[in-house]
Amino acid sequence: MFRITKLAVLTALPLAALSICALAQNVAPAPNSRPSLFDHMLQKMDTNSDGKISLDEFLAAATTRFKHIDAQNNGSVDAAQMANSSAAAERILHHAKSMVSHLDKAGNGYVTPDEFLAGAKKRFTRLDKNGDGKLAPDELGKRFDKLDANHDGAVTQDEYLAAATAMYRQFDSKGNGKVTASEIAASPKAQERAAHAAARIVKHLDSNGDGMVSQDEYLAAARKRFTRLDKNGDGFIDADEMPAAHRFAHGAKPMPSHG
Image 1 (cartoon, one colour):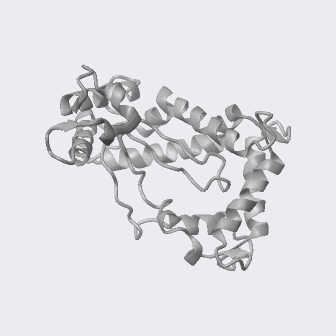
Image 2 (tube, rainbow, N blue to C red):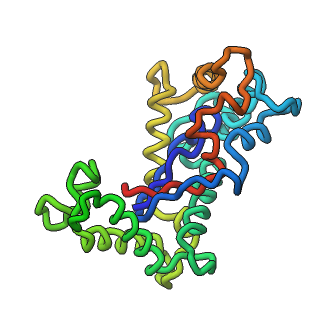
């Protein structure tokens, strides 16, 4: 099952982590093909164009994002508002397009069942470390029980591909064997994952336990995030301070992963 990894820095974007289940292969980052995450942050936050991001710029961007989520201007948001925000929808569609781009070997703008299963087979092969044609619980984690259809303590390639086929059918809302990014983004699984991710974010940011995230709580988290990124403590974030794992995260295609 595809898993779209973290969409963005926790407080820099309204929805920090969103996963879509599917079965496919890992994608290596392509740092030279698209702007890095820092380039993206500069574009959105560097209002004075000095090539770095100040705390004020970082918080201003976070404030703007919060207000986009808080469409009713209540000063606080819940998980449903986060999951259903226009920004979250845009991110879901963006990553769905990247998923299609990766699997669409024919370049038709959609994913066929064969292309989907080809990705699943490659992923299975990589997970099958000892090459015995079976996946053990430690190779799949919490997803194991869902995939072990006959409950024999191992997941065969047939079981893995059966799950991939079932997922493809869920994506293929028109039943025409041509799954588009829009279908993936609108799928119940994508929406379910978005809701779960938003609930986790609210739980993390809700410091007073009222089930909501206020603007102050949102900005407090943004301030903490800025402090972690500003490694030399000079009050600015520059390219050298970005975590290595995030430098090309925005430009890279999503990393599909089972689960």
